[in-house]
Image (tube, rainbow, N blue to C red; front, side, top):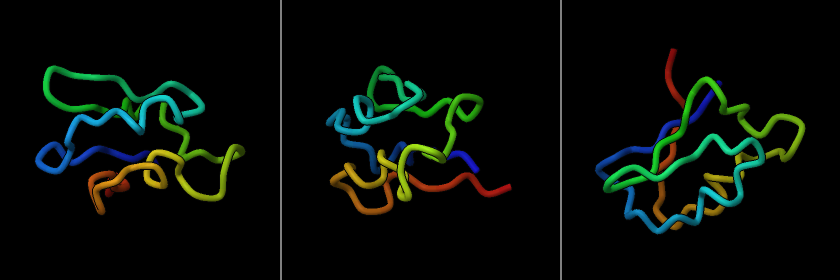
Length: 66
């Protein structure tokens, strides 16, 4: 299940983007976004989503509810 960045909480620090193993995170005008079509939940790369692990803002990156 892919992740999304909560726009109201994203500070634009950019710590999430370089750790994404599939380059699903890109910088928008004011905050970063995760492409849900590319996001792989870090399956096969890490037991914890690396973007969540490196984000300094708690709950700024959350799983997309389906």
